[in-house]
Image 1: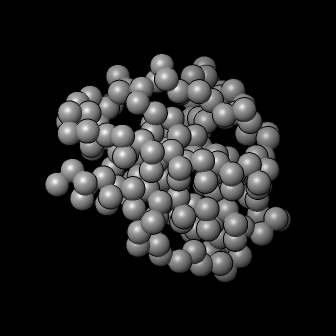
Image 2: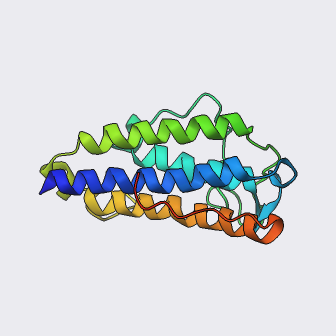
Image 3: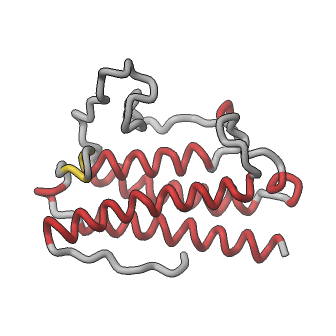
Length: 170
């Protein structure tokens, strides 16, 4: 049964990453900095990918930020900032960085999920602020990617008439 779960989970990670990647690839240059709700398009992509990468790591202590990471850019709100300050997203991640990060997360999802065991999946998430089993935590991670991919897709539909197709599995 665990092999079926892991295969399905890998497929859904890949589908969510494919959707996000398709939105990034199809975004016209003039909209790469456009606001998706309150954040620039490239920042939304980076945020979703950063957390996919981060949460695919076994725990916080093992995570290594990518070489292109900019401090605090993974955040949207005032999580680590004084309550009256908004994060400044004054840097647009280059398209090629986002495309490479999608592929990195795709590989990491495959490797991380393949390494899971029954024991690890029923154990803690690995992140103290998520009090759910690791199996559910992976589903939560997929949902987070898809949540932002949907924002990106809706933005493209609204501003450029571009429709991002449905991806059923990886």
